[in-house]
Length: 293
Image (cartoon, rainbow, N blue to C red; front, side):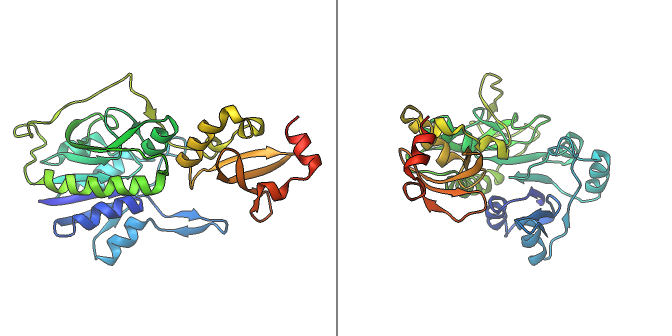
């Protein structure tokens, strides 16, 4: 079958690598963005992969007010219509594929989503699951639908969340599992509904929590909460959930401070404009007294 792939991150590349023996007729990824302190315009890992494998790569500008939508959806629909794809596959793409485009593909579309749907629909399920204290997470292969993550569940696998798990390696592990599930599913899928596997079923779950996209502001914690022993378990979960981005940060003595290590209290910190330093090293008796007041 001819596959049109949608993805933007290193997790997307994990799935692409598993599909290498398939016929990928095109790749859609997000446009290059300024990255890092020097704001160097950088293509996505998916664009790099696609060009290295001589596959056509397309990008479309997002809506500046709603970045998960396109600036010109009709342009996207018209452009993709010329690609003769049998099926759309999405993995960590970040934008909403037009429903009209999904409908026009003979086999519809499927998505690899790193959560136990219907729990944690949305853009960032792994950090929200860790932050909430969930004991398990998983990956779901689900049909693309008119709304995010609300299609038919085709395959799903659950794994425990360990007390030492952080978001990035856990998400990578989930996409490796998801890529295996996807390839197994592709052998017997007809997404129009005539021959869905027996375990497929509708999933909605409006009462389930939604994993909205993280922002830098999500990493903020008032300083007194960070050093409060009663908050330590929650802060530890947040440190694991938001590592490496957006991290945890606060303000201390009118300066922005990043928390780079946390046990039952900060262990490594970085004051704005300074190098990382051990928290105990950074404190003078006067600072300690003011910090606890």
